[in-house]
Amino acid sequence: GRVAAISVVEDVTEALVAIAELKKQVDETLLDAVKREVTAAVSMAHAVRLTDLVLVPPGSLPVTTSGKVRRQASAVRYRQDEFSRLDATV
Image 1 (cartoon, rainbow, N blue to C red):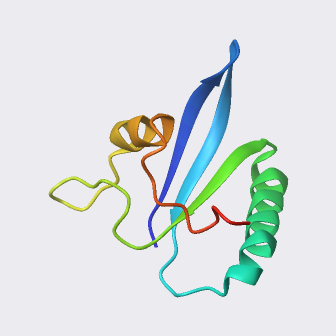
Image 2: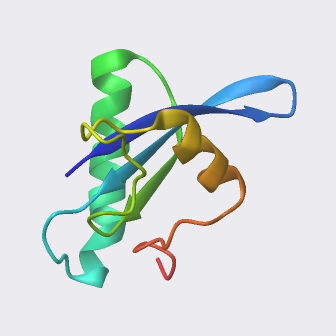
Image 3: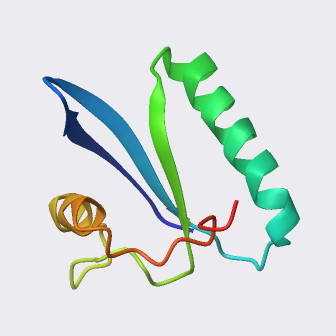
């Protein structure tokens, strides 16, 4: 699915957050493992710390009319805690 990488201000520094739409239904018991694996992969590949990985259902990320992810709108929704997180119970 789609993914948006956004930065959010945490205290006085910027933090990296990724919001990922999951295409397939994933067993809730596996979500923690998915988050750990993705966070580790991002860290290893890009040498950055992922502060939060938000797993959301398909169609959750705001997009333009051409289908591109609207990152600024995604950042606003994240800051306002408006995403329906699949990982909320994990």
